[in-house]
Length: 258
Image (tube, rainbow, N blue to C red):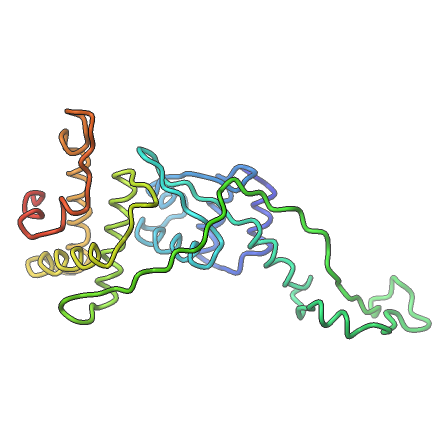
């Protein structure tokens, strides 16, 4: 646990409710470099949320630049809190919640008297101008990276409802975590299209609510593959955990139906 990072999140994170709670949970587990590696199940239990909601919040934090995610084989993901982003956020928040003052504002104030005649420094009416402060150099154990553009979603059947795309993305996150896939294992438009097609097929026979139950069934298929002795590599020492072995066709998916 890093008290420094906990304080940074408390003071500078622009969130509330479940998002702030999730961010604070990561900070509570973090070392001084901002790194932690809780499983999704553990994170959900600590924050009193569903795993689905935790996954959505983590993707949002990563998209907004507050965390980086690094996938590890055979282990849970490593989450690194971007201290530099929190420091920059803190520099733009005036103490007491007042208006922000930019460097340009300070330049325009040259020659301004900060205390009027007869006003002592301890007077509550003394105007205070907050200038820049020394900021600790942020720690960085991750290699600098250029944000990867998100490929556009495509579908042979026209526009896909966003809730279906979101459900497939949740299945993908579950697959990557369970299979221990590296970050280089990409979520491509083709794989998304495969997932959406299989989701729609499952929704036809799913009980209400069909979307949620079809999504959960796809996650269960992932779990069955990971537990299979051949696909997991327990038999020959070589893993065969591939998205395409699950969802590239109706025939492949049928193999994993209960």
